[in-house]
Length: 250
Image 1 (spheres, rainbow, N blue to C red):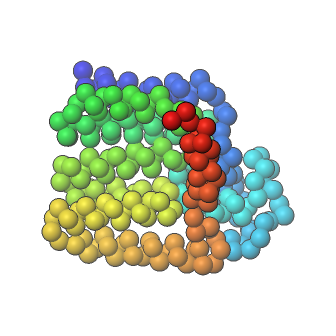
Image 2: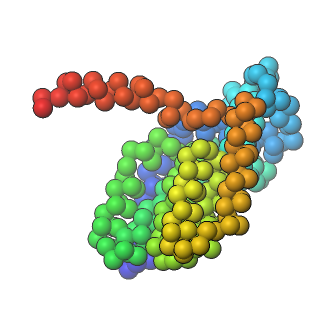
């Protein structure tokens, strides 16, 4: 029965993705272009610290600067896409399937968190809501779903006290998507581990310090923006929330 539920949670986002089709976000095509260029032997000739390259990506219409940044942001995701591109499999279809399976893995992880907390009904309900959430289709083709899945897997491992595995999952998350948000989540996870074990995880803390230094260097050299797009749109979000409050009958 339980394995049947796992299978249903994995398949449902895949069905949603296949029905939705190849209507993906532009950021997904940056990653596809990077993986395609690596697979075909095209060097990312553009210096990552310089301005836009004059040569657009032939298939996806992206320049090599943005593709290079995609490689720095999502090295493991690009690696998987590179392997698929080497096999001659169309990358948009691969990206769609991978991201849909990521949401399925996230749903399974959420269910297992509810199970670990002794709230199985809440776990099933939350997992089902995730599977049919509109964010699934808006992130198809990207690595976002796997970041969410790894976060919930780390939460489950924390609840069960499997700290070494939790640290490994947090490190894997940085490889899937290296960003200020994921760095903050790793800090939170290691803080939980420190609190529960009453001992600072020195080795993992050193790895985090190196990752933080790498992020600082990339932002200092202008390779990546210090904040992702959602952070830069906080003012717009605030105006939208204020407008909703002003129009509210209450």
